[in-house]
Image (cartoon, rainbow, N blue to C red; front, top):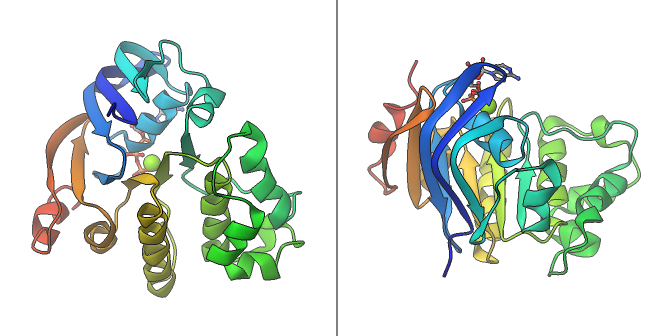
Amino acid sequence: MKPLLQLEQVDAFYGAAHILHGLTLQVNAGESVALIGRNGVGKTTVVNTILGLASLRGGQIHIGGELIAKPRTYMAAQRGVAVVPQGRCIVANLSVEENLLLGAAVGRKGPWSVPEIYKLFPILQERAHTPGTALSGGQQQMLAVGRALMANPHLILLDEPTEGLAPVIVDQLGVIFNQVAAQGTALLLIEQNMTLVTRVAQRYVAMAKGAVVAEGIVHDESLDELHQHVMV
Ligand SMILES: Nc1ncnc2c1ncn2[C@@H]1O[C@H](COP(=O)(O)OP(=O)(O)OP(=O)(O)O)[C@@H](O)[C@H]1O
Ligand SMILES: [Mg+2]
């Protein structure tokens, strides 16, 4: 089977600033992969390059085996790669339910619908008609995950989904991510919380200075090894 997402020797820029240097990364169907690294190494730029928000000037990106020569924001979602962006990006003047429906705009068929999202996150149903940004940080993150699922993706890119959240909420999200993965959606989890990484990911890819510096299998004893790549 073709990888869901494949970056090969990718060079990416913001203007003249060269951020990704020959970055190679692959996510296969059924996998949960963690992308880790200190602040500023280029993790979000990986997502931005796939979305066409950073400029791809070397290497290749394939989504589901299809070459994406000139990435544009809408292309990934159309091809089954949804994004939960860093900072969540809940739309302020839309209700919870309207934010969810935005995720379905791409029009992909699949198992996820508003009622299914409400089964996964009952709190979102309780708050369906409140403004999305009136929710707590943890609830907004659930909404961002729900919105991504509404696109019925094969793969979700989660960019630091637990940033700034209380440990108890982080634990809840970890359970949710595993449920989503168990239902057949692959995950690329960008994360600074290595305990969560060991709970969710089977494999990790570590970045420094815009390139991959280590990768391996995540197992029970991986915590020390993982921490080396995120310690300041
Ligand atoms: N729009 C932009 N224009 C120019 N440089 C940028 C832009 N966005 C990010 N950068 C720079 O690109 C580098 C990589 O940033 P990026 O946001 O990808 O890092 P990150 O690994 O996601 O960090 P964090 O863990 O803090 O989210 C940093 O040096 C950052 O200052
Ligand atoms: Mg980032």
